[in-house]
Each structure stands twice: as C-alpha cells, then as structure tokens.
Length: 118
Picture (cartoon, rainbow, N blue to C red):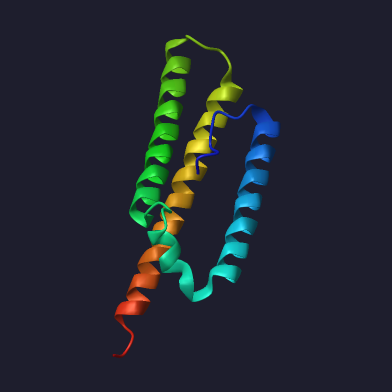
C-alpha cells in the first residue's frame, strides 16, 4: 500500500489501480516461483508479515486523518472544493473496506487452520 498518496482526480485513481494490478501480478509470479521455499525468502531480508501489516494499517489511518482534516476544513469554510473533500473521503473509505476484507480473510484462514484435524 505504499503507493497510496494524494492522487489527483480520476487519473490518480487509475494510476493507483495500475500500481495495484502490477503488484498483484508480481505477487502471483513470486508465489509461482517460490513454492515451498517462501519462508526462506523471509529470512533473507524480506520484511516480516507483522511489519507489513502495521505499515498498511498506518497508511489507512493516515488516509482517514487526511479525510477528516479535509472535511473539517470544508465545514469551517477554509476550502470550497467539495470534489477534493469527497475524493479524500472515498479514498479513506476504500482503504478501510479493503483492510476489513483482509482481516476477514485472515480470520477465516486462521479458523480453517485451527479446525483442521491433527
């Protein structure tokens, strides 16, 4: 999620989408080539899963803070650009929904593993 910055309008959203697609393809290729050796790659200097999750959550928090600041500035009359305020709110909403979906999938995977017969 490090590619989430203040994107300018539809072009920024499309650029963000393209980055997501590129990263998804790179992950698919890495999964296909790494196979059972994936844990060894983590030991070779790749960031830990927990660190990546913390970074992603911090970025979602930053987007929500930016959204709140933009909304407050609009409410105080400091800005009259409702489009940028709504765009910031939508970015924060999408990031939060994606985080919730990732959490739900992780919990489902955890439950599946815990319910496996030993």
